[in-house]
Image (cartoon, rainbow, N blue to C red; front, side, top):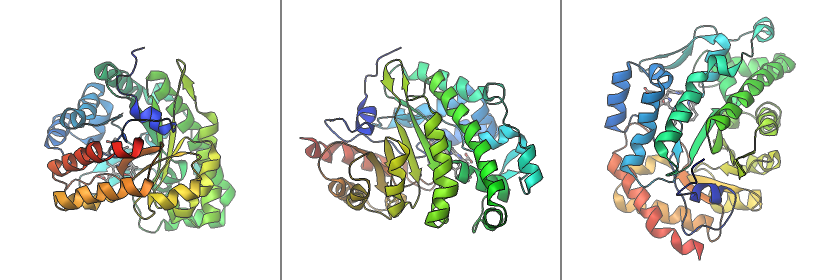
Length: 354
Ligand code: CP3
């Protein structure tokens, strides 16, 4: 196994001292990059890109060629898991994800299979191995999945949703059935992430984009409990190296305090909670990742630099900060503006690590 040439991300996630704050960007491989759009066109469509390990590797590497980033993130999607469960995923152009066979009732939940991940998602693990070979130890590779609740919203609603009316109806009418479904997704996701780790993923992030749509009690029952099930089942060490786990519930706010108890290593924070406040919620028991508003990247270089300075100052001195946006970079962003943000992190962060 190649030793990492740059292990700042791993060290910061484990709250170990670093000379500067490491940085990566959610959705760093994506449509804001012209080279990504060209490779996607070559693949034909988004899922064909995900299913082609060579091209998935190519788009994973694209942002690393342009920018000073401290991590690569596997190019894939959180919806590969329900697709493998037989729901029939398609990405209609300009419409977002759609499932042909959404899970709408108890019978469908009982019939939902939990297939072998090696048989159904082998293309993802092939991509992980291909990317690790290409990276050659330059930076760590982050593997990921969705949280069962977030993935479950797409499975039940049949696609993106504004109000989550159907799944919230199910939570009220038959909470045990919903828990059974989330349990199946958690089981499959645990196997999926462990296979990513086996193939070479060196850190894991669980994306819980829609957890904060739930009231705090329901969040604990339906979102946090199913993430807990995954964390409990994950491989935490490989080749003598700890595999850090990051949980990211967008809009978590005070629920960050509940998330610490899962045994994760780090929590993602969005821009609606400042890092200083988040640090008091988690009492420095875990690392924090975030949290510049992605919309800031539409502003001038001066405004972007100030946002970086503010986020660094808000976290303050000491280890345990991984710089990131508070959510994914959007397709409309000028790639040069991301360069401004990354340069500012490199320039301004060492003073917080003396
Ligand atoms: O660079 C990276 O961060 C890795 C790749 C990645 C993608 N999706 C690629 C993608 C990751 C980590 C995800 C996670 C994901 N997917 C989430 C959670 C994170 C978040 O942003 O909240 C969610 C909710 C999804 C589901 C999903 N995938 C939706 C709703 C959509 C359509 C909306 C959109 O942004 O276009 C996708 C498509 C998708 N996943 C794209 C990419 C680059 C765009 C597809 C395209 O090229 O047209």
